Image (cartoon, rainbow, N blue to C red):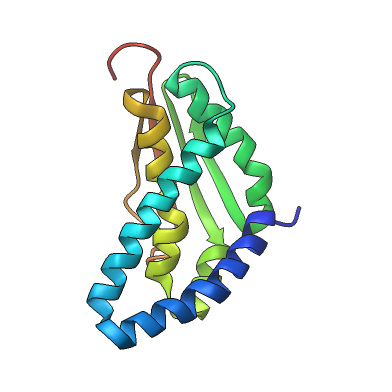
Length: 159
């Protein structure tokens, strides 16, 4: 299935990349990136809250509902290797990523990370709260051979 999210990201990139490059030229790369990454962090929080606003239940249930709702948007833009899923954990790797291909071709993998990859951390923190702990040590966007997704889940109570 084609990825509606990938198509939206291509449009976003057509706007963001030239704007970011113009700001880098005007005020320097470090300051321009700092401002952009901060703005994107706030945007990710807003988008995440809006996406999950209609879901009810515990933080974990709301996070799980958001993951299920988001998968059709991602479509075939990533290749997933499922490693395991239990009531306490979900582990999988992304072994191919068209988002990373796009941003590497644009020469902007860090922008791609800030725009897309960081949404996983944001959803776990903003929605999952203390019921979803997310760990990732590698992303294709940042040059890794795969993206490793490791979620520790809990019901009400401590992890």
